[in-house]
Image 1 (spheres, protein in one colour):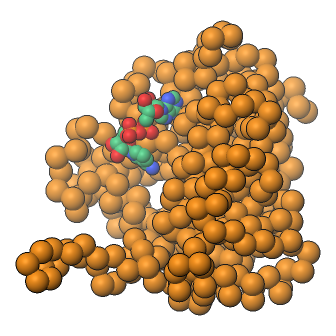
Image 2: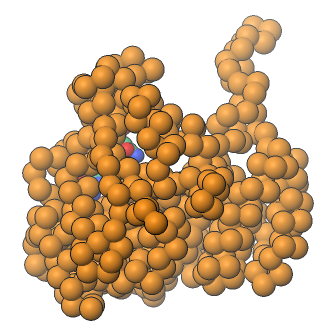
Length: 367
Ligand code: NAD
């Protein structure tokens, strides 16, 4: 049987720097755990624009649709800020998400013990936190029609439409239930059924899908209360599922519970392919960080944790994903710190590659 395939798109700014560390980790799993991948690499974002005059070449798009999973670094940078909207680096990423039909966006908020002081919340509120927000990514108010700015009488009116079909709600709900089954078997669905018809339908459809998952404890919460509960006592949640707009806000809010942008991975999943694996794009939440690009300061952990998500959700290697996460936990407990993680208590200052090397050492020690 051939090895699983992985397309790597490092992108711009710190993207290639953090991805170089992920390559070391991928090689480690090949050499030490017999987990070999067929890895290919291509351009996206500004790098693709420089080479081809567009932020994603059609061949790259075709490759992304053919592989088992795509791992992306980051796109964008000041050099490209004045380009026409249609060829901006972000358009490359949006095209990938759209053509792969990645409707389920997974954003974990996990607090590593050694970094609990980094949160703006009290340590006991966030220490040991491990929750997952599932955001619907391809529909809702960001896409609904009609939309636009129209003349109405003697003034303008701005219009966006919140619109969800039953099947759109059902497929993201199903992906959240599947996830809850692999975790703590608790799912909280968030909408505004008190004031929005789309919220009423959301609640009805999620309740219907729940019948296929009797082991999962389902609860419903209004999204505004959800925001309050996330900062009051986030550990009450396991998996949260919500729509595109509320998910955008709630996942950013949850992200900040854990402190640094350099620590946050994400996954965007679509429908299962012929081999049963979901179409999948894994990427850190952060951008291309032009302010630190080329200075060996970038924290590679968000990108490495994105690969850990790929191990778990695309390749069914939950134990190996846990091994990688434990190695990161260990390195942080040992006080190894890139600049963004350096707090008043100090620590062992390392560069981007120094962090990658420390994680490899911790992986070696795990054998
Ligand atoms: P950013 O995430 O790139 O950076 C925000 C701040 O966090 C910066 O101070 C940066 O130095 C720091 N930071 C980010 N990642 C870090 C890491 N791994 N290690 C250490 N520090 C890190 O967001 P921004 O500055 O708003 O955007 C910069 C560029 O990135 C823009 O062109 C933007 O469009 C693009 N962007 C791309 C993505 C993506 O590719 N998914 C996401 C957000 C922004």
